[in-house]
Image (cartoon, rainbow, N blue to C red; front, side):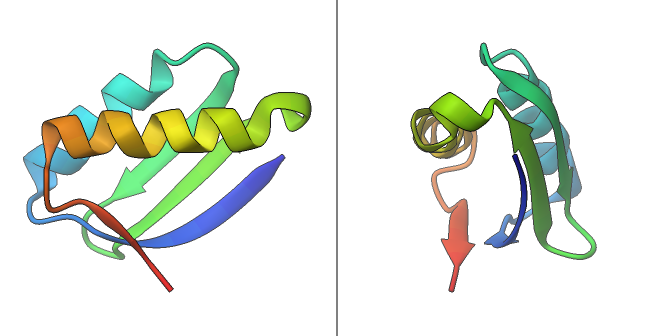
Length: 71
């Protein structure tokens, strides 16, 4: 399952770090965190998507406490 999220991230370096960390989560097929467009595209296992999504948000907030999903 692939979903696009509007996000808030403060810097390009943080976006790169977040993307690299989320890619390491088991079940993640791919992820793109774009600082310029303030979007995250998460592609993960359908059967565990909700759990992976929550883990991705937790991981992102550890790197950038101000990271947030908008809307």
